[in-house]
Length: 537
Image (tube, rainbow, N blue to C red; front, top):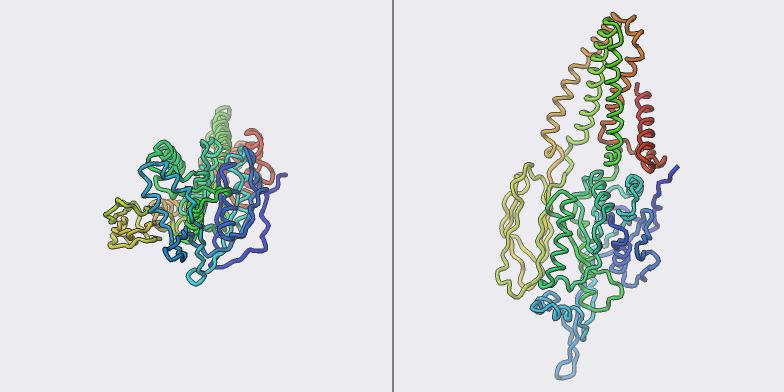
């Protein structure tokens, strides 16, 4: 029996409107645990880095889901420089980091020198408790996506178990290192997105171990490599727009400008959580993983073969038995299909016909101050959508909107805006429709199928009953075939269900169902379905 590792609730746990839950995913040695330490140090400059929590080489220190809590008011950081005036007094001024880097873009080595410059420069933390109330951020660090050894189900169960006390997730950060993506990472991430499609609206990628000198436009090979990685991630996610952050979590770095960039990126990442619509974790069912669906297809094929074998067996019977069996198979199959349709369509309608918000897409503008950028006017848009937009969430910094087109109540959105002079401008927008709107055609089709099934059900029951009474003797003689046929149709319907009860999912993991070879998995799942079908019958 395999245990599902859970996370003990730490003493710092606080609930309420000021709590934000952040889930960390990523490859082994991508830097998840290092990022956690960087966040702790950002929230508390006195924090001593816990090096024993950080892995080395190809070894991951995170084997289970771990929860960490930090409290922050999102302080900004700046670089200050001290100069001496002619009269000997000391003056302190703030360094415009964007401007310094922009001035040295002609040569990447000058750019690197600017990043490393320490002359009279010091990092300053701008605390201001009056402007921002304290928020409590819970970080959930998970095992590496490429370290699951094919046991995605085990890790998913552990994550669900750990997050149930959280109630909802405000941000999912996929930590990406600078090594090539492994097949395990790609398949695991695809699996997670299939099981948790709601994460699409709260997901962002954090590229760690990134030297800021590689932001220089002349570092074309590095920029091209980063663009390729982003495109690959967009391909995995199935959409062309995802939020990306690049950061260097080097604890040994003491250069003020580099440290300032890192601290402010961490601030930006953490603030992302409070701009998202949280995703609820309190679900009674779990969508099946690709491995589960593959096993189900084997079960379906097996019981389809049984139905075919039943038909072949009928050929050996006399004409009266054959005719009776053929008719009872038709009636049983009709009734089973009606019952399966009723259950499936009712579940679909209850799940999707709700006013809950569903993520559509996002748009992002993020531009530093530039000397040559005389025209600060910009536009950003979301083209015509299939769905009506019901919610637009925007966050901005050093930008102001001049005109908005479309948006809530329309199927498109556009904005004209300006970036403030000598400022780093940010404008982000996320778009949501409702579940009922996004799945309106499927819901209408489900209602039609449900109505038809409900209308046909009494007639199917009556036809089966009349035929059973009339052909009681013959049906008794071919009763074994009839029972085999009904069992096969019930098993096929059960295997076709797209999700399963959370308790059943957790039980499967605890029993190690999906941790054995395929033949063993099929036998265990078949036995479970048989038990459920027998109980229902």
